Image 1 (cartoon, rainbow, N blue to C red):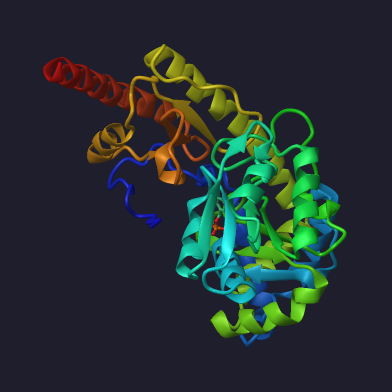
Image 2 (cartoon, rainbow, N blue to C red):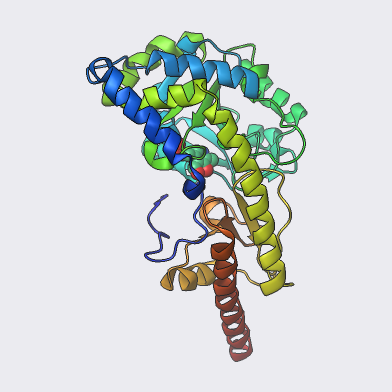
Length: 386
Ligand SMILES: Cc1ncc(COP(=O)(O)O)c(C=O)c1O
């Protein structure tokens, strides 16, 4: 079972996943907006609120998603959640029955698998190819699935974009079987080359897609604000379920995020972070090329906040490297952590967005010592066993 704290290193936190550059966050703007809201709107914001969220924030999200992601929705279809994790939990427990089958990309997002397993659902790992989730393989594995969880804009964690053909095949399946598609569009904003494909949700004419977004990767994860965009037919059911969970999300923060978006800071911040993350990814690739040449294989990724570093094919296990790194306070995750089925090749998933150039280089140097020592140990074990 997914357990987020397993690899949380106590000291240094080099390659944390999903963590944005909080050092480059526009703290002064945030502080100003927060103070103004506190001063001017506290009477409005201190009482109980709408279960679905602060209306101006829902309107700002709907407008932003329409322009930036081609999502077709009205503000009424936007539900503010405590991060996308709460959205996943809500969907898993509201739309499905225990033992229903769910298609899950393999490797895939642990947070989703965790929510589905806790709801008693039957998680069916589905293999991926260059075009994303293999819809025909999924239909063979579990034709009766009630839901498919996908990350079409940038598969998490491998990074491929789901092709248009595959998107249409998935939508045709969902429409035909009256099943659901959960589209996690997490960090689709961070695309560094080419134009992103618009969201799958924008192609859905049958009301089968539930779109999941978060402010964790753009603003900061401790904000715990995300959103669901749901088909109109599900609004009432999810409204009731949302209210039961925690009544509503904190209002003051929602109002500040709404101001942040409406005043243009959100889009400006994303633009600045794209430049910064492009740079940080280059620093990471260059450092790996310098300190781990021919050992770790990394390829440029036109999107995202992490890279998959492939281990030498002779290394059948990534666990010893991760454990050794963790023991000296270096945080990183093995690719195997995200997979259910066997992997063709082992790898490490390295988040680079949150750390500066010096930390990236220092992290890679530390990692190189860990990897070389582990490779040496594994060679000695092979010789001893022979
Ligand atoms: C695929 C994916 N979805 C969602 C999230 C964000 O989750 P939350 O909004 O619950 O913080 C992450 C965080 O890294 C992620 O990698």
